[in-house]
Structure formats: C-alpha cells, structure tokens
Length: 97
Image (cartoon, rainbow, N blue to C red; front, top):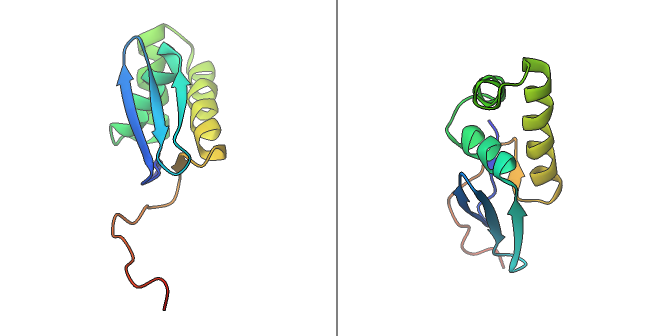
C-alpha cells in the first residue's frame, strides 16, 4: 500500500498543496493536479482506483491518468516522502542500545 512517510506532513487543497519533510525542514510544493493525485492516493484506494478517479476528474484516458498518478507517487517516493511499504507509526525508544 502506498503512503506518505511518517516524517511527511501534507497540506493539500484543490488549488495545490505542499508537503513538509520534518527531517529536513523543507517543503515540497505540488501543482493542483499533483495535489489531486496525492489526495486520491491517500484516500486509501489502490493506485489503479486512484488513476481511474483521476481520469474521470480531468477527462483523461485511463493510460495517461495512470502515468500521471504513478509519476506523482514515484517522485514523492524518490524524495523519501512516501513509500509503498507499510510505515510503522510506533516510535522506537531505546535505539541507542
């Protein structure tokens, strides 16, 4: 399942958005369409379902919508802001041992 990393905090609207990476203190700004793709991915749907909803919203063919959603997912994953693997929400205390 694709999801944001624990250190990534999104602020998303239909007019665009941004993600704060608390590890670096940097913001990643998103276009309105990238923000929409991210909102659909975070809604708990599969990537394929997100692409289908994205295609309907923007009047795209399914292939182009899948490419657009995958591009957003890959870009955020490459920046360390997201992962396809489950993220543990539990902090690990005692890491120094």
